[in-house]
Length: 367
Length: 234
Ligand SMILES: Nc1ncnc2c1ncn2[C@@H]1O[C@H](COP(=O)(O)OP(=O)(O)OP(=O)(O)O)[C@@H](O)[C@H]1O
Ligand SMILES: [Mg+2]
Image (cartoon, rainbow over all chains, first blue to last red; front, side, top):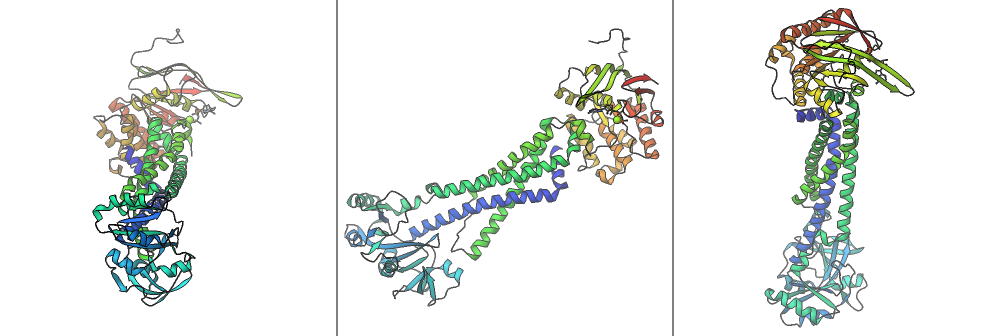
């Protein structure tokens, strides 16, 4: 019966109920979309790393997983690495970050073909000229690109030579020498990482250890499998902090909205609360009614938030998949629910307390 | 126990006993003596009307008898329960079990149907069964056809009759009514008053009704008059 009262109260002021739930829903959507985007970017990076076909990555010997510190490796290391036993192919790559979340990768395409066993082109083919550019399908779709068309990336005019499926190294591939010239890494020629393919992938761990000893102080080897396993939100402090900020904001906004909604409800229902108390409702019963209303707001808001999240994902993937890859992360749905609930419960406390301690006789006299 | 040993012994059948009841309100610098030594006995099954002019303390007495406010001094027993020592929580429990309220302004919950208004009183009262004659009571009140309606779809008279049903659902020892016909026209007033009298006769429900209208009071078995916070036999 109390539950019925809770539902009837919410239905009675359905506009206020809906608006409150909507705001909670928007908060839930913000969190889930941010999480979905983070996971999307990380998954995409992991896929691209795997998509290279390499077994081992060689990076400058610094301690940090994600250093976009640019080109620190002299290109002379590439033939040196390639001479090592079990190394079938080594390819130097110069990665230049562009558009915040993407990279333009300079490499020798024919060497790269040997490493990945041949690139599948959706349209066009490998770069031949110095200014030829290969992009992935998402980018081509988002920008409606045709083969042979001029493309401006990094302020340079390229000619689109081929379109590949997503998931290989990065969104853009250009000839290494051209990119070295463009970024001032030509004298001496420098690269940012080396992709290594072994004659037997089963030897990966053994070779990682050996290469690390051999190249100590210069290069650091990591198996692609280990590298990919690092693509986790917990390994990126900035992203973690950002998610924490958005989460706290969601709790605060949820709190404020539910507080306001419950507070006005309590004032408006002063007399009804007096009636309930006259009928023998204990203060805890009154508090319980308001807490339940807040819980319903949180749950409805959460459901709205899930729907919004799917809608937002659909909209993003239909329009700008190349810039923002978003995935669904069901593991975060209960977390988002807890966040919505936390805000709502905090918001219900003061109004509930105010209602519970209201004087019955005064409340009954309230007009 | 009693602060007035000179009082006549009270008959065991009395369901309400009030001895030298005082209630003083402190508002700012002034003290308002709303009750100044009320003595009252109400027999089990009696229908009593308390009549008096505005400000004479009728509602104050109603609130104390109903456990909505504590007395300042004096003794009050409702169905054997001494009110003076009760804590807030105990008074809440007393309201659940011992009293049914009927107010001048009906005071139904606007978001619930008539049926649910009655049901929620039962829930709050913690009882799972209704009085065996409750169906008969609904019949008597003439609201059986109106139970699915919300208060705003009911007339004042109908709302008050739903409120009476609500007050009776937990089989209270006493039914307290404060100006139950104050907002009703003569026709509806008489209907409600006749129902109260009928209820009293058929179910032996004890009723204490407060009014300032002598015509309304005439429906009761007995009338007492209140003036300046004291009860005078009428
Ligand atoms: N909460 C309060 N604070 C201060 N004074 C109060 C309070 N409640 C009642 N009084 C005063 O106590 C006196 C008795 O009031 P009460 O409401 O009992 O009168 P009443 O007989 O019910 O009058 P009416 O017929 O107008 O309803 C009045 O002088 C009133 O102003
Ligand atoms: Mg009054």
